[in-house]
Each structure stands twice: as structure tokens, then as C-alpha cells.
Length: 86
Image (cartoon, rainbow, N blue to C red; front, side, top):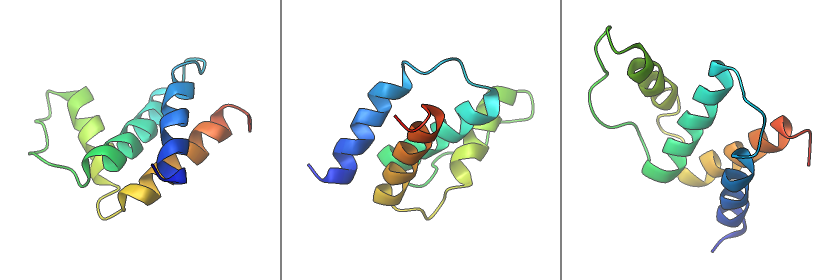
């Protein structure tokens, strides 16, 4: 396991103990997680009545082309920032 992957997995675990975050932060975490674990967005964009699904799809789609390693590193950095640098 690479250092980046180990750091990402630790950040995923640590993110579960963070205080509740606003939707914008949750969407950023979601997009980075999906890009790191599944690659570029797949599937069609949900329709306008699926507001939550559409927001999640858009957060992931914004990261299209980002490598898994870069997404993992960004996720870990963002969790560190949210945790106050812990």
C-alpha cells in the first residue's frame, strides 16, 4: 500500500468522527472520495427532481480527469484541514 493510499484510508476513518459539516463540505468530501475510489463520474446526471443525487453527481463530475492518487491526497488534506490540522 502506498503512503498516499494509507493516508487516504486513515482520513476516511477520521472523517467519520468529525463534527457535522455543512452540505457544501459534505459534497466536496463525497466528490473526492468517489474520484479516488471509482475514477471519473459514471452514469447519467439525475433529473431535476432528484436534488440530492444531482448535487452529488455534480460534485463528483467537477473532479473529472483527476487521478486517484491526487484525489486521495486532496481528500486527506481536506480532512486534515477540517480536523484543525490534527
